[in-house]
Length: 315
Image (cartoon, helix red, strand yellow):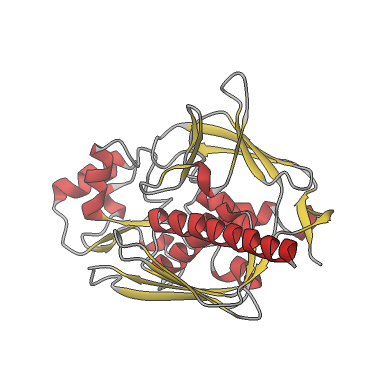
């Protein structure tokens, strides 16, 4: 039997939200068994908790948000990814604004704080499910596909396919969860240059800069465009190349886009509040399809549990 975990000591940090540009102060605290991962907005009274589970997902536009009544927490997927990968079942995350800080666009900071020296094993058993038959699900709106196969360990293969000469087909593999820290946690979020103006004009990425996201450009930039980027994202115009990766010093891996997509898959899978033993293959994943798949898994195994209980009752 594997036991649930929480953290031993709280840790705090501050930063700006990628989409809102708002500063938030965050404290992650220990929590008792069966508490799960819950968020609390300390800037709103009376305070109440929002569980990080699929049924509370409110928005998946470029990030994952959860909501209870009129209170929302935005961009939760990165901290959830780190908590899930390191096996932390229970934690309270307090923040004094609506969006989690983007930090450097990866989960590097979180895994440093959540290491073995800050983990406490509890008495209750983890919620774990072994995949015993092939589970297939496709999002008809996005063409994303997910296949969960029986396997003796938890592993993930992520395949992406963008209409881009720079990224196009990429894949990343997590053979075992222990590979997450060295192979996945440093992968930054990313976007294409042609998306930036649209996102910015629609009130998103107000906290974006060339230090917390990789930006890809497939066409040569005019001086005016470079100046706009430098002004908007507080960067020196001389540091922005005319074409390619506009912030190449920030790239850690050749397949960083696929690795970050895998990171996001784990963050959204955490919304099931369940650990799995099986091989997950995700093709063209995104937050919308990830969260739908998490809800599908939640409902699938709830029905299976009900059916098994009924069979036991009728014996």
